[in-house]
Amino acid sequence: MADGPSRLRLPPPLLDAFAAAGWACGATPSPRAAALLAAVRSGPDPDGALSRLAALFEAHPGLGEETLAHPRMGRALVALVGASPALTRPGIFEPEALRRAAGGKAPDPISLPVDDLPAAMAALRRHTASRLLAIAAGDLTGRLDMP
Image (tube, rainbow, N blue to C red; front, side):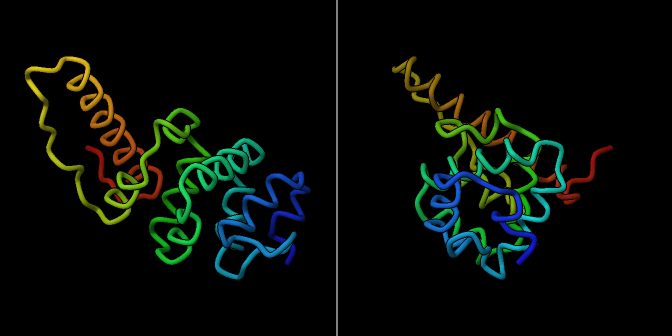
């Protein structure tokens, strides 16, 4: 297929990551991944987006197959990796936030431990990243109406 990773001439480590995630068989994209890869290729930073996707697939086993099985989630992930290196860095990115955003659900309310400042700060950072990801995914996929 012309829209796949082979057309983008990805180095073997990226091809391996896409194959392991179910997005490609060797240098040929899976049928469900072809449209998503075409969307990545048409974005502002296709090479960076592909690298970020591969890193997320490696950091979160099962994410690639899950995004292929749930088209909204796949479109949201592709939009995010194309537009926001910050929100899609492993360690910042949380698949649950993407699942909720793709399903049109708000992140869970935050509960902060009052007696443990480091734990409260970590919870606040996760919640903030989750909210930002939900807003960005909604905006980039046209599912969020902004006044």
